[in-house]
Image (cartoon, rainbow, N blue to C red; front, side, top):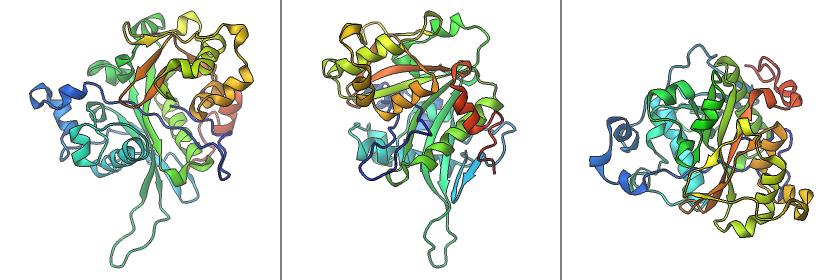
Length: 328
């Protein structure tokens, strides 16, 4: 869900930014048109794409670095480009199993696309073709779902794995934002792209006066015993305080405290964690109670909760209190 913009390594062979990989829910039901509501059908059918959300007063361009630009999707065509990028990363590069609709359309699609904002990083330095106007390429994306929008529809996607309602109820008046479906094209997994994604998110957070970000982060593999060190470290050293804690859904969760605290080597655990999770911890995020095994994506998911008030001040200084570091 979140990368550490100052820690991403770009040298050959170094660790690359991780991606959020969230499995579409209701895999079997999605294959039955009789079970599609209007919004779901519009989002799933290959020839139907949700309209881009109203920017709501946000600047047209949220930031620039060189030939790269970050902004919200403006057209249906741009949302399709983001879905194709997600398909390429999740299903072709990674090991996720697409449903029939995604396989036919070559796009990663689910019903939430219709109600989310789609943050894009575009590269304008594209090869010129004869008699054709060059079009920028979508090279990175994030899907953003505000609480007020989720409440008007069918809730947060994260609620399919974690019981987040008590967390919301414990923090009345707080505005929550769910981050998900994040990925970056492989040649662009570097500091510039990641910085722009987070510059865009920070601008969005400030504009909509968001108080809390949340979402799932994945560890590779479905055997929690093989990641006992990482899970135990997150449980003992990064678990959310009670007022920010949410639990895995009953029947889906597995225990994270697989080793006693004294048996955990923090340095070794941090080294073994995905860059995605390490970036979150550096930002000041907390980890929920219990993990969820996602067999479709071959991952074990943990809940990440990041109150804006808990963000490490150096990151706020890095992007600017008014998100003006990379302003266009």
